[in-house]
Amino acid sequence: MLYLSDLDFTLLRSDTTLSSYTKEVWNKATKNNKLTVATARSYTGVTELLKGLNLQEPMILLDGTIIAMPSGEIVSMRAINKELGDEILNISKTLLNLEPLIVAYEDKGETFYYPKEANSYQKELLKTMKNRNRIFSKKSHTAKDKNLKIVYLSSKDEAYALTLELKKVLGKSIEVKSSKDPYFDCYFTTILDPKGDKAHALKTLEEIEGVDISQTTVFGDSHNDIGMFNLAKNKIAVANAIDELKELATVVLPHTNDEDAVANYLAKELLL
Image (cartoon, rainbow, N blue to C red; front, side, top):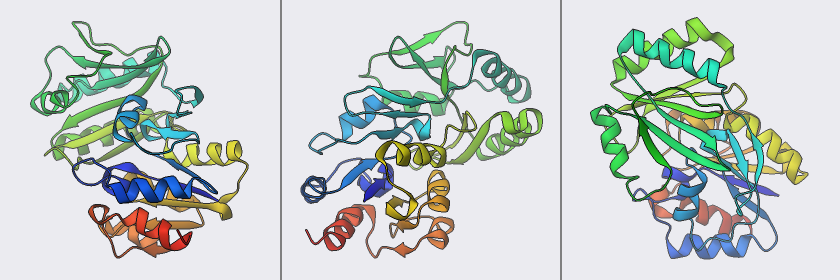
């Protein structure tokens, strides 16, 4: 069996920590099962947060744009090229005078770029990243050769307007996801390669692991988990999940992420 869990507000507690109980159950479960994560976070962010977890299987990172081994070896990558990336930046600048954060793949690693004049939402996010390497700001804020994610932080109205315009102009050449951020009082609009989402990454991961949909169980809480829930046979929503995800779930857990929801399910299901 393959068990695949989202991180924020699913496996992680709301303060982004893991309880000792979750670590204990996870590590026991990996002895006879395949466990991994699917998250919007980067490789660096995941390895920092998941210290103490036994990670052996490929991980779905950055919303599905990358599948990487715990060692950092890239198994699969989906990126937006520079030409299309610059077109996205031009649309947002012209329409709303918005500039994004860009997560690019350069020199065998993820690099974060932010505009010289960061807005208030971006400044709040950057405070949480101040101790990380590979974060840059350049006077000329342009797309890179391999853009894994182009991310806008804005008001709800700006996010809605930008999403509509990008879909109208660029259509199916990109994947656009917009939702309220769980940690900051703003909306995230994330632009990905059309196959750079969790759903497509799940298909690729199943091929790598040699399992099919009937052998896959996914855990989630929010909008970027919907694609996985539409694919997997066993889809488990934590108690704090959005209603839309609960409607797709085969099981809605009685516990929240702060109550070790995933660990409790694994302990019961696998008789740990």
